[in-house]
Each structure stands twice: as C-alpha cells, then as structure tokens.
Image (tube, rainbow, N blue to C red; front, side, top):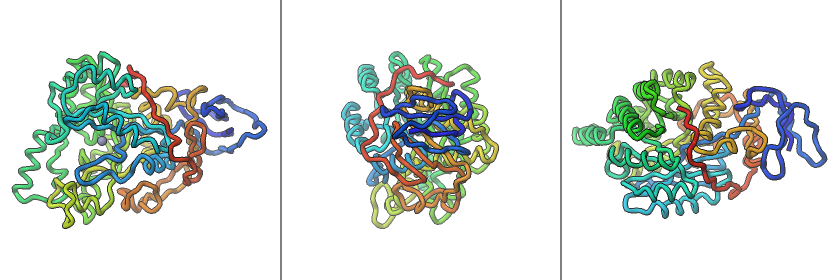
Length: 462
Ligand SMILES: [Zn+2]
C-alpha cells in the first residue's frame, strides 16, 4: 500500500512524505514523491496526518472483578482499539495469591488469541516471588511487573516485596510498574465511612484522597532509589501525585509516569449524579482543577505516557456490584471499578492539541512512541521508521465523532463522555500492513494480532 502526501509525524520529525508498506507488514519507504506500483493500493492522505499506530500500555481485557468481569474481551476490545487508532495493547496479567504466574500467563495468552491487533503482556504479582520467577517471565517476553500498593485484601504487597521485585527485575532488565495509593490507610477510611452510614458513590472518591496517592509515589521513589532501578507509576490522577513525581525526577530518580484520559477530562462531580456508579474508577476522579495541572505535566514531560486502564462494565454489572447482588450494591465499596477508554484515547488526548495544551508531536510521543520505548517495543512499534511494523494511522483532524456508547464499539452500554463530540478521528488504520479500520468501520480480522514478546532493558525516559 502507498499512503500518499500525508503530513507524517513521528520521532523523525514532521514532514510531507509518502509511506509504502510491504507485503511482509513492514514499512519499506518513507520519502516524498513515491510513485504507485501496479497492484498497489494508493491512499491519498493530502491534508491528513500520518502517525505511528497508538500503543495502549495499560488495559484489562476480560479481567474478572469479583462476580463481574470486564465486558470487553480481547476480540471486542482490540476491535474498538483499532477503530480508535490503537494498534498495540499491553494488557495486565494477574497472578492471584497462591497462583503460579506461569499459569496465569498461559491463561492470558489463550484469552488473547482472538485479538485483532498485537498484544504484549505485563505480569502482576500479588505476593512475594523468587528471582527465578521474574527471570522466567522475562524469558517469555514479559518484561514489566506490576505491584499494587493498594487493595490489601487481594492485591497489595508490602514495601519489602516491592523492593525485592525492583531489585530482581532490575538485575534482568525488567521494569516495575506501581499502582500507587496507600492501601492500608484507604482501607481504614472505607471501613469508617461504611460503619458511619456514608454509603453513597461519592464516598469512593472521599476515601481515596489525593494525598495518599502522593504519599505512595514518594515511597515508591524512595524504594526505587534504594534499589537503584527505574520505576513506572500507572494512572497518575491528581496534582499532589504529579508534584511527587516531579520531585522524584528532580532528585534524579528515573520515574516514568502515566496518566489516563479520564483524569484529563472528567471530575468527581459526576459521582454525585444518578449515574455516579458508572464513573467509579481507581484512583478516583478528582476535582476539576487537577486536570489543568495534569495537562501541564504532559506538556512539560513530567508525565510520559497516556494509557487507558480500560476496564469496562455494563450498567447492569455495575449495579449488581462485585458481589453480584440482584437487588444492587449495598454501598460504594461493592461497585466494580474501571472505565471504558480503549477506543477514545487518541481522540481525547488530541483534544489537548485542539485546545493548545500540547503539541502534535507531544500527542504522538505520549500515545505511541513513549509507551513503545518504555516497554521494550521500540522501534518496531511507535515509529514509522523503515523496517518498523506498518502500524499506521491516518488521522483526520476535522472529522467529528460522537462519544456516545452507541457510536462507539466498546462492549458497554454507557460512555463516560456521552454528549461530547470529538474533533479528530482516524480515517484509516493499518496493523502490520493490513487495513483494520476505514472511516470508523472495522475491516480487520479476529486473530490477526500476535503475541509480542518484549525486550528487557527498556530505555527509561525519566
Ligand atoms: Zn489498571
């Protein structure tokens, strides 16, 4: 295929060029004035942007959450991703307590088989592990390890385990990613709220104050400093958390930070509304003023990546809660947390370009290049270099896309952005050279996606 006369933007710059993709699914040429060959499809991209396919480094497809399960599996979720311009996802495997990480990984690899785009996997440990377990994961191309500083009943590990995994991952070129919230303090606040009869949805936010996110990030920075390793903080959601990241970076700690579109566009007031349960995610949505600071953090480079934490549920599943009560959840602690987002990420970050908060180059870096570099996929993913995978998005900055659930493809019946219209949407999306979406219509194939073994020793950006 030949994509002609587009404005091509990636790490190599911002220029008018043509892109040729080969039958091997790779990019074979990026230069001006290429001529179409017999049998080659030519896509005229004049007036449009041409960027590397998006890399979403934080998804939870098919994840079981109590009695509920994330409503997108790897088939439906990756189709929605492709339509929105994301051609690679890195999903989080969870090895629950008492479970062999190797077996959890095998389960996720099986779940991922119907994916329409390429899939890498992170591993989540929920208890202490041996160094040989870390090494075994890296040998299978799983080079990043998530640890939770929250959810003491199920997922949280203590600081000793965090230090231990940082050290063993660090020795073998792996990277630790942290859910940074002080889970023990939050658990107390939640119990206090419930026993005082404060059961409303807004209590989800009130019992997870931003200062306890900032505290955990500061602690994470200290542990990374002691371990002598980089660390990646998932879903930075608040101004105090951002300040803690900046302080760590100023002290010379290699801290890479991620945020998500929901923290850039939504605020906690929605939790007070009749559909408040549909907006429960963790960390919670914050007051509106935090958003401005997070955009600033993206523009300054304090935050390096935007991922989604995609974990959708249907309204009925949310109402039934994690205990699956037909009569509905008893209080805010029973609402499954997570928002849909895998399809709308590029468009919602692009809004920052529309409003002059970030540049087009920032947008490409945040959504594709930086996550690929951080997680050992660069330059095969996240770049338009000759020899890279032909994951290409042709972006129409003038296209208008309603963000209601009915106009999107994620498998859920509500949208956090309902009523909004995004300005900017993909016209054409290629995944390893194959057209997977054209004008918002999926035309790829389930199972086209491959498992992506990732390289150790990612070039840390922090
Ligand atoms: Zn997550």
